[in-house]
Length: 219
Image (cartoon, rainbow, N blue to C red; front, side):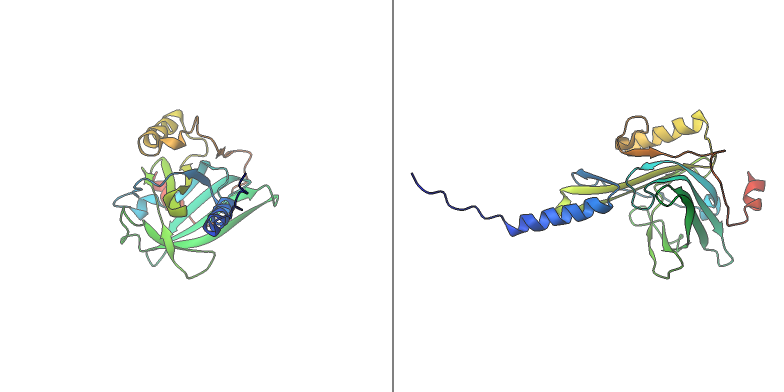
């Protein structure tokens, strides 16, 4: 019988595996396939968006909030007409509350096909695209993004839902579920795998960094 020839592993395959493992280490939701055409919100109104938001659900492996609970997002218009922000939560791995500040710029220049605003984070000056997927401004805020990897064979999705109320009504949650069912059904809040649902309310220790008295008067 013929001696079988030794099999050589293609170096391009090794590269692909390394790339995949690196992505998996920081992914929120890594799945096969390529991203659909993702559209951000049109005609974003920053003056209606500012105020307090309480996170209700997100990808469990979101690299920015692994082990976190009681997550809040806070926005306020500053004197320059830009939007200051502060994101905060209780991180179980550190056993303490911690947060990060930042600012949203150029919110009048974004588009559904690109980004909603440009953001700086943690006191830095480098601006990065910041997308807001869907909001009605008054009750819910849905964040969603998707990036293709490995030549379109894998996609990395990131998702979260926040509401104006600590404990939103069934009516609000039903409205959110309708939007999700229409636009990103893979994130069905009742059935989707890999979701983390935040605790909000009396068990959380909230700390606000901006004056929201005007926002509350408008409500």
